[in-house]
Length: 414
Ligand SMILES: Cc1ncc(COP(=O)(O)O)c(C=O)c1O
Image (cartoon, rainbow, N blue to C red):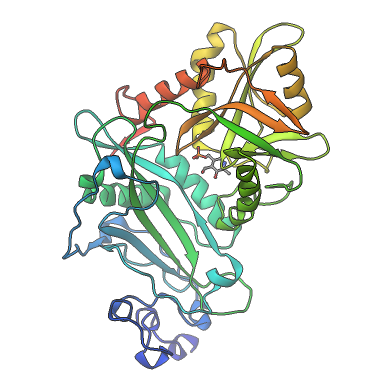
């Protein structure tokens, strides 16, 4: 009965011309209307993503890829996008690769009001044989699904989406410049598209993947950054969603970042609680290498995944490499809490070996100093050094696997 009252999903997704309250430019009028009526979400018949159904519509106006030396992070996009719609009635609909274009969304769509949005950040690399590789895409999919589930958005088969992303990346292959440090940054994004101001689980969603060619984070070699410890705001808290990659986690981080920048610091360091635990740096995980006060043993420390830390794929890779390659040399590898006073004490006592951030964008980002309570804490780099030994090694080891110089299960050939 209800089904008869409702328009079929395919039709419901198209905007009747009369619904458009003002004249849209031709391009927008021709594009898809993704928002649906709230009622269309009432009968569950979930289908998973089916990569065999992929439909591809190629652009009529292929772009000339930009000169690699002119690439600025996240400014340039490829010719196409991958889109997959979901409705509560039908599950995941036909995956589509189509020309890169605007989305057409009703102003009442829930993503605009209640931040039903999560995303991923991953890269595709060209190896020396010209093959295209993804790095640990299973980890990105696992995190993407966890983020989606936390905000009542639909989850999906990780292998099916990896399959589709691989096909999309192959289609956009010509946008991946040759050379170490170059890659295609991929932004899988999932938004709630239900048209309603009522707060509830979205009855429809859109998953899309866009791609942006990027150059080396450090075109002329490492450049160590200095941080300002933020003590007046927190990024995440126990029981919160700081361990999920939700868009809503990022906007509130910009003001502390701008504050730090206004005082000459490239990034802010997130502290937590009266103990002032060091948690993350900007949008990277943080690693601290110290010598133990009693035993003098070298220890590589990063904050544990206690729900306030985003489980970075680079973090996980560094921990794994450290256990494989540093532990045999006597290093202790620890996922444990460390406070800012402990870090300061290690610095004063000459036991702080190095500090670095870790994330997909830069792989590692060495830290020179941390401004904290009016002090400038020295993080162990000599004045003429831009990176410590551990950060250097990690970058080399991880890139060897990303670019396929070392054949490894982390690398997924498209
Ligand atoms: C808050 C935050 N922490 C850590 C990371 C590093 O994660 P990954 O290594 O997966 O890029 C990111 C980047 O996505 C992030 O946004």
